[in-house]
Length: 323
Image (cartoon, rainbow, N blue to C red; front, top):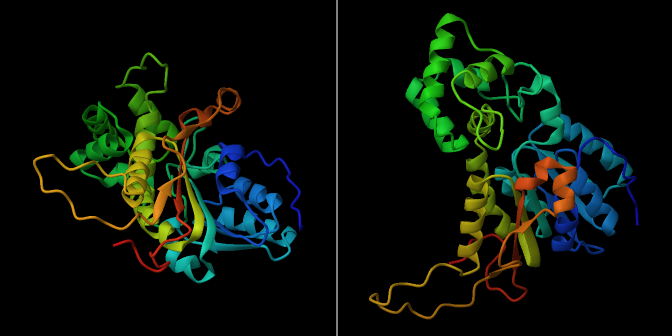
């Protein structure tokens, strides 16, 4: 096996043991990491078996890290710049895959770089873009209508005080443009009290803006449609989510593919007998991080892992959705 040296890089992949257990990498297998980030999953998969892996990331910095790792991998790793929602166009010709993994949300590298504008822990430009194009968080904050801002914070950040925050933002930007994470966090903290869990009042709003800037839920919806089509028979699709909006989408999509939709009302006509589903759930309930991992890595506390298996005997073609 062409092993890759596991060098500590500051990035701690969440639920790595559980992800590897679900994927069970095998020699000769082909795998896809749709959210390469710091490369933690990719390293572990390539070290676990003499397999090949394709990595996708929209962040140019992640692509650079992946290309450096690819040199060590001796041809077993290939990087693709783009969004995981476009995985079919980016890597469809490389498949089918024996395993696909998505680690959603923002990476540790992005959070730790103040200049990326993802975190309010250190003051930096109000950016939040995972890639290098499109509108930034500053663009949204300074140009959106008050009602639209409130909708973003409520829908994507699940912020109950979204209208109050949007009103405060509009009032502040009338005095001067809001250009840094510190400015925005201060505005939010002045009108939202800390909750009993002592979570920073800016947390939900920053999440909402980040999701909107990067169309994260739209990307996930597209990936949940594409990934099953790219799985080989017996292939595993693993998704690690970090908040309820992501987890709800993953849960619903996987349940439909596995034929786990609710039973019809007894007053409705009995449905016609259908063929066995092309997919099965690997776990009946999502897995959570262990207590030990959650203590060592606070980001793991909210993580949920769901996995879908393409049944070995299935009439579903790789290039089409189940009928």
